[in-house]
Image (cartoon, rainbow, N blue to C red):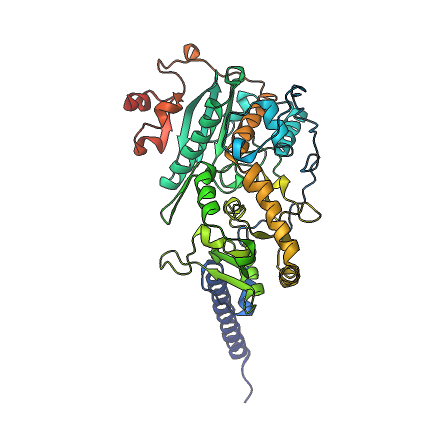
Length: 473
């Protein structure tokens, strides 16, 4: 017997509802699977799930191509002209003598580290073309956790405001302030320092705290974030966190020098340890490319269980060390460059202050560059295993360029002071003096006093608050 119209309609509704329920369940299952793939640190995932994982925190799959006017082979810089050294007493940088000297003068800095200040020149050119900087630009930057506003007056560092969300922020802000203070007090031309005021962030990405058109100082930037100024990251002062205590960078380097082994004794493998969830698409591509390869020693780290944890010096026992970006840049690059090993890195998306010295080919090659999906990793590693002399030359170039020159304490101090100078060239504002401030203690707290505050007073510090200043006395 034929169904009535109402019965057919109810049957159709039932089918539609069942289909809708099925689609919802499949969607939820897909969301859960993708969430799991993004956040898990398990070593193995099904290949299909790996393909479904989005790029994660990476903004894109492209990389930055560096086009620098000054490089390792250039002696002159266009926008930061060198001060001529007296011809009667030529000076050259010597690592053993000068590497730990934070007091090189400007002429020595430019002679010792050509190409290091390229990023400062770039930012200076950008802001000159936009009319320079004034206090109004800084007032438009809302300070969030992980940021600080400071000023330099008569060669002294003052903290206006500093906001931290927990110990990680507080320690990183304190490390940056300490590095700035060290660069100031070791400056032989300290009395000539211009007064400037600026805002810096210790977050991984500019967009974590503000828009990309603000003149903040930060550790890394993508190619389109042209308004920011790059500064050395916190780890040059020291890196301490709940999982490990690494210490000052120069101390790490000294330890690695004592424990490193000759090239011929290094393991003929590529090593990497890290958390896949920091950049799942990128890092799992490395893990997949190295899995099952005789040259691959690539493993995930579980900090809670202390699984696959490897010390910094242990990485140096390998001929090849992989470098992979994380949420944005990866602060571990400088530690890998401390080893006399070949750093193998994918095409980088984020720029740090010293990245202009990276050379991927030619006689000065100091690292090996692979595609972001690591599709050419096997071919490049195997070619170097077949040509150990070439591999050793790349490793030696890396040491000579980075560990023994551009990542030394001397280079870091020079960069900071050139950053002060380059920023002051476009700074059209003034820094209020204590007599101009309504607060008897001044609008900023001297660095020397700030570091003596209790931790709880540092995390939400505001020197312009009368109550806050009373609490500090």
